[in-house]
Image 1 (cartoon, rainbow, N blue to C red):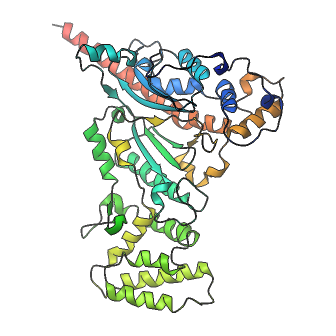
Image 2 (cartoon, rainbow, N blue to C red):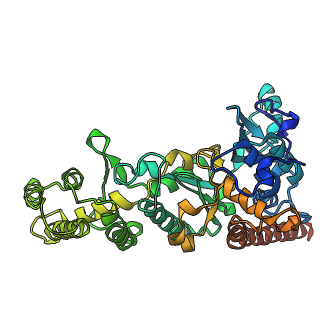
Image 3 (cartoon, rainbow, N blue to C red):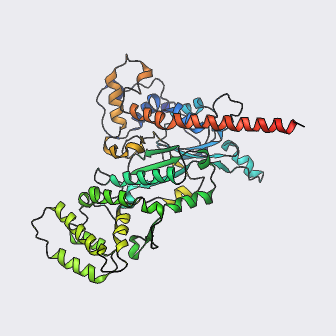
Length: 453
């Protein structure tokens, strides 16, 4: 293992034999705690699954396996004393597990696979060699709910609730479908960030080998936003006909806008909120007319929900009536502005960008970064995700006489591990095995042909 910083190896960081009051008591205080984390890393963190995933079939005995593959992967640890340790690397799952148990990182980030072992980077730098460079990295996307603060009113910053989480659900649906249908990727992992958003890992071999320019092009494919005056985001859907990718999501986004966000966020219930939407309409006579009408009905007997729906229908009618040229697209632009995925473009562009590992625990919330099944993302509720304290309570209720091999299955984390394996890891490893076998046989046949006369 290599170290960017010298890791603390004191005995108090060890987990084996850890026996504290919080383990003997069934009720565990809420919140994040380093002692809780030690138990989590000692009993529940899925080391084997992460190792198998990051090895991509190279941990087997097939002659085409690259035994150095996992060892060339960069990990980074954020420790409790604000120490950030980059370029951690491990030759086996045992080394990986022992290091995490020993150092108890508050966060684990995953980086690229380098051409050479990260432990040797200084030697190659001193020799003037450019051999230390990333050669593989999953195509990743990072979406934070805080980037939607200009269109949500229930929460702000890192806070999230069931009223604004549908924005993340929409993002998963749109990005996942496009990655599969438009780009042909199959092995895609979605993960809750533990606090305010979602991460996407595209793990097909073709995706892992994309260069930075190709990654940037894919990220740009999803980009529709531009900054207007005062930094306010706007959507520009140029052209007489929408791009087929965008056109295919018009109805999906409209349904989420009208059924989930319009009333949940009270987008048209007050003057300050409906003025934000009217600013997106370029025709002043229409905006003045609607503003006067809505301002004159402030004391309407309608419920707030009815008021949002009524005003939205009025706005749609005016814009789509055809009386004013160039305004029919305006409804779509409003819907896209409020619902379309907002990506952190820089995360996706570069191979050497690190991203938080699945099954980490967020130190601010204590929630585990669990995978999300895109086929059932409507059912995901971030407020019910397992926390460190609930997991320890579940372990404690089992008692000391239960089989240790069933500890994970007995907790609420077990269902997420099962889903990770069945929906993502097993199909991925099967595909890796087939690709490896096909490449090996093709090379073998080529060698035979070169020897034939």
